[in-house]
Length: 202
Image (cartoon, rainbow, N blue to C red):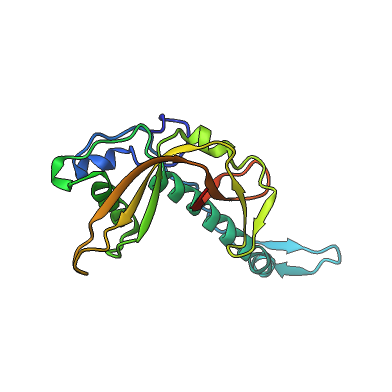
């Protein structure tokens, strides 16, 4: 669980879990959203001429637009990482879910608003502050993902949720594997970054 006020992001331990039949954590908030556009104004040129500032604003939006979009996507990836890949302290589900991963993946699919059953999902049982430090210096760049990446120096307790292959295609049941391993992480930038995805285990 993430303590209240530490961040504007939810964690798996949020009160949302109560609807899935388990105890939740604390900490609520919303990611910052871009501000509203400025109203059109008129600027006076040195020569005395007048031009609508809206034309300048539109030009700036065209230039800065892609950067703003990328920043929004990055913040969303950080939020999703904390929401879907960190469960600390580890929650307990009701027996009706038939295992930790079945309850967890019900939550993950609900958050993603998708009925698709992912084949594998990693959940870390460590505080966000600990996980975040792994992306403090990302000296490698993973071309396959077009992002900076790193291999953690320390092992992290985690659960691997893997889709049960011996089941009908209409089912979505998972096997749970609790382990301690080093992680390959994607990071939001090269230095003083935040993790945005788990791409493998070492």
